[in-house]
Every structure is written in structure tokens, then in C-alpha cells.
Image (cartoon, rainbow, N blue to C red):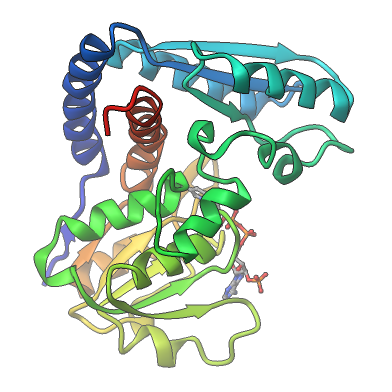
Length: 283
Ligand code: NAP
């Protein structure tokens, strides 16, 4: 048997097309443009690459974006900027590129962005809204996983194991899946015998950051494996699953690269659209 390969690039392209026409329609209705503001603090190379990719994507979608580069700043100076952008009606979404240089603390800064402009969905308010079943702007990676699962009718409910309990992946994702009636197990590095959870699952979502860790003995042949992990092996990007083996054994799998990643990158703009509609009273 050979697994169905879930094409994340194709899903992301479809989402981009829908977003382009939605942005056009809602911007026309509001008579103004949506505007994404990205704060980049410090000189992290990864943060530079990610912010440039967002600017490119914004251009493709026909929305404004600005990167504010701040080589160094105190907490008060950053908070002052966040306050000014929060009050500016021409700024729809604010995101802080992670990582920020110490002693600045990403989660502390993000909590000063109003929930309706927090397009990264990482503030305590937006995370808390998930727990209270009032999802609004949700974090990108869990949203990408939910998007994938919603595209397969037999995966719309079921038994799911997430191997990750971080605030960016496993914690919000477990709550988002609970909100959609899945039955969830959350495993982590202290979980004894992970196989007993993964083997009975309809879907397994892995995000442990360990190359080729998951092999066929972890999964049943009807399983869908969603690989969030990003690892570098001999200059190549690979996931947490042993793709060569799993793709011969299970039902469905996301590749790395080209699976969860491209969908994740699109999610910030789904949030920007929601934020725009909310602020322009078009929801
Ligand atoms: P993280 O904070 O380091 O979390 C890793 C999680 O995996 C933790 O919960 C950890 O358990 C668990 N873990 C580690 N080794 C394990 C093992 N041997 N068995 C079981 N659980 C284990 O990392 P993160 O920020 O959540 O990211 C996780 C991975 O996803 C990374 O590869 C990252 O690059 C990738 N990622 C991808 C995207 C995307 O869009 N594709 C987005 C974000 C992250 P403990 O809690 O016990 O330490």
C-alpha cells in the first residue's frame, strides 16, 4: 500500500486564491486597505527571512504590509510603539517576529497587542479564547493542522494523538481539536510508552523536532500522520516521521517540506482578514 501524500503547497495556493478575492471584496466594502505591521527587533537572520516572506505574500494578496526594524530597544520603548500602532486605525494587524533579543520576552510583548490586532494569535487573550470556545485569531501552526484535518471527511472526528505540549503547537491545538469533537491524547518527553497512544489513533500529529523518529511500529495502517517537525539533516529539511517507511505503510501523510509549512505561512493572512472584518464591522 502507498499513502496519499497531502500536498500542502496546493492547499496553500487554494487558500491564497480565496483570500485574494476576499481581501479585494472586503477592502472595497470598507473603502480602505488592510495593513499588516511587523515589528522586527534585533538582528536575527531567521526573523529577517520570515518577515520578508510575509511582505511578499502580502503583496501577492493585495494588502499593505510594513516591517518596522528596531536594532535594539528597551521593553518600555517597544511597548510605546505597540501602544501607538494599537491605537492607529490604519493598522489592522500587529505581529512581533520571534525571536526577540533578551532580556525582551516575546510572550510579555505580545500580551500588549489588543486581541483583535494579534494576527499571530499568540497573546494570552487569544489563547484563552480558544479554551473558552470563543476562537478568534488562532495561532498559525495549530490552525494549519485543523485546516488539513477539516479537508478529510472521515477525519472530521476521531481519536487523535498530539506529540507536543508547547504553547505554539500542542496546547492550543489540543483545545482547538477538542472544540471540534475530537478525542485527544497529548504526549510529551515524559510520557511513558507513546506507542500505546499513537497506535490506536486515527491521526497522529508530531512536533518533537527529532528527524525520522516516527516509524511504522508507532502507527496503525489506517492512520493519517501530520508532520509538523522541521529538522535539518545533511543540509536537507526533514520531518519527525520516517517518510520513506511511513508512506509505504499508513493511509495518509504530510511531507516535509511541502506539508504543514506552506499552510502555516498563509494562516497569518486568514487572521488579518478576520481582524480587518472585525475592525471594519463587516463580520
Ligand atoms: P518545543 O517547544 O521544543 O516542543 C517540543 C515538544 O516535543 C515538547 O512538548 C517535548 O516534550 C516534546 N518532545 C521532545 N522530544 C520528545 C520525545 N522523544 N518524545 C516525546 N515528546 C518529545 O518545540 P516547538 O516550538 O513546539 O516546535 C516543535 C517542532 O515543530 C520543531 O521541529 C519546530 O521546528 C516545528 N515547528 C514547525 C512549524 C511549522 O509551521 N511547520 C511551526 C512551529 C514549529 P517536553 O514538553 O516534555 O519537553
